[in-house]
Length: 327
Image (cartoon, rainbow, N blue to C red):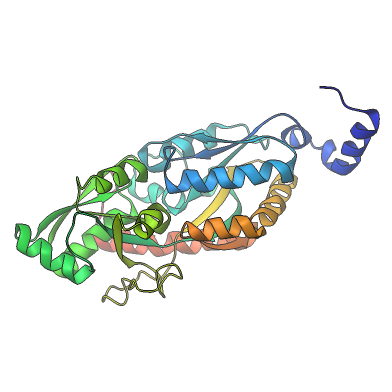
């Protein structure tokens, strides 16, 4: 494909001083793809979010933006890949709270340290974790589920979670302790295989994110019966919060954001953040993200860094209080 001289000059003027930064002009405004790593398999909620944003970001950045799934170990594999990546603006990590705030506290040697290996770029949404019941489970609410488990099997049941040593696993423990049930976690390699077993009624319940559950909840294939957060979710006005059911310390909402390897040029971070802000403000993008169960709200680097720090400290206290030992 050939370009006119006028077109080349116009593009160069648009990039301006950014072209002087090594790797930056190469990463953006060229044919070199920007990779967005996702720590979970294709088909899950995080993957759907990443692909929606990538499609819009390529136009804002003038470069191909591709999603690369590095599923496994609750996002640990993708996080390790980000640490190993050259900090030239070609590789980013779209992650929710688990890989950044939780994994380093529950795994002895995760292979990365978010505080020293990563740079928060920007945040774009919060969401709620939820407990959902499979379609074949007769209970319609948390109290009904508790009563059903007691009557069905003497208080024993298994609840699916998308990753081991995750917030859903701690929630399973909290539910069991509150209602004096013997609840065991069944860890999966991401939300997609967990959802498959829930839809096939292989497990009676699962704890994951609202984005994981919302479409099947709307379709009546499963039922969300409780969510975390200080108030009910806008998409789920009939579903009580865990706080309403008597649980404490579950007000802070998990986040979604973008991270880069430490050493990534600040000019790239600023430019990518500005592009992301434009994308999440687009009415069609905001509508689709909201439909997935997210509360959309762009947070620039400084604000997002503060959110990550505070959230991490909150769950550090909860994890320590639970007696959990890093594996």
